[in-house]
Length: 340
Image (cartoon, rainbow, N blue to C red; front, side, top):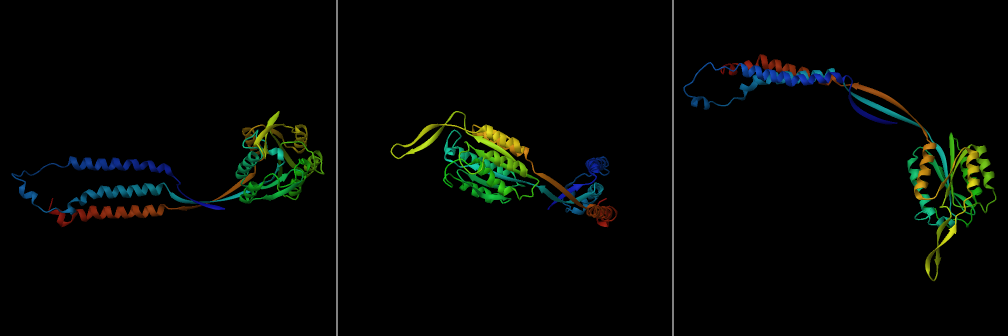
């Protein structure tokens, strides 16, 4: 829960009355000027200029100003100023998500810049940053599969470990079924209302002890949705080859993604399959998944209001008393009377 202190006006409709105060002051000035009629004629004003200045002679002018201040504070009190202390309690029902990434050697192909693996990691990292309420884990697979980090709310840890994902962590190959099965092993004991597996691959299953379709059936039985992404251009893609004599060169290799199998797996679990042939499409796919799998967040707001009008009334009464004192006594003192 987080407290939020807000200053509000319960009846702000009274505040328009403040506009009458300048009109009142203007009226008093006009009245004062209209009554200034000369009653004595002096042959010379030289002696008057030598009289000492007395600031008390201006006390009568303060009376309307003091009444104006008192009226302003009365109006502010009528508008009922309040301190509103709002306490917000967020109840979030997050989703458990596993991201399973293919790290076979073909992920070095540069049809998606800078290459498929780096692009996949960067877009996945941005997706993780947007999912504040969800537990997210990372799984990788090639010929074998293993969990880099299980589903956790410690997203900083997930992002740090995602950066370490690279080729060579396991033997080369593409065991899609194993990638699914290992991820399911991390999701099966989850008590989250919704569980999701994002599977990213650029090839066809060619190794592993578990068939991908069988793994998909296991996911459907566990209630885990699989969103599968085929990453790679259509046709051929430039693949880097480091030659010890001529240095790095590129060879176009055939892009073979078993889309039919991925469609079957995703469809059986209530998920979807998407093909990403460039970086923009990959970003858009993650955005689609983000919009389809929204966490449920409820907010309960507790309001505690404290009226502050009494402070304004105290100021109003103080100005009224000073104005009355000034009008009745100070501005009519014997000292001032000598000037009349």
